[in-house]
Image 1 (cartoon, one colour):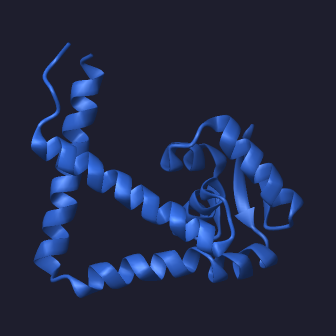
Image 2: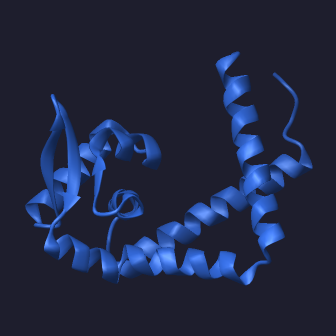
Length: 145
């Protein structure tokens, strides 16, 4: 067995878990599943449509989970699929989907933007810089496994 988790890593893991729990709580309060919230968030982050493959990659959800949730959203009239090029597809918000997203996902985006707006720009930049550095180092080390 390798080294035990450091105190700093335990703190980091706790913070990541608590952030995920906060997003889960938000989806519960907004009356949608966590996967639906993440999918709609990703679409809204791109505008009003997003490649299906990008949704899977950006949400970290399994392809099966994304496909099931998109199918349900399509059935509910929230999204529709359009052929992008060849066999790739875009997931697009319907008019109902735009309205639904404004009442759900947009509230989360507003909260996030308000938090960053309340920090000074140097803190925001440092937070993003360190997070990005951690991500690149993690990916690099995982690639070497």
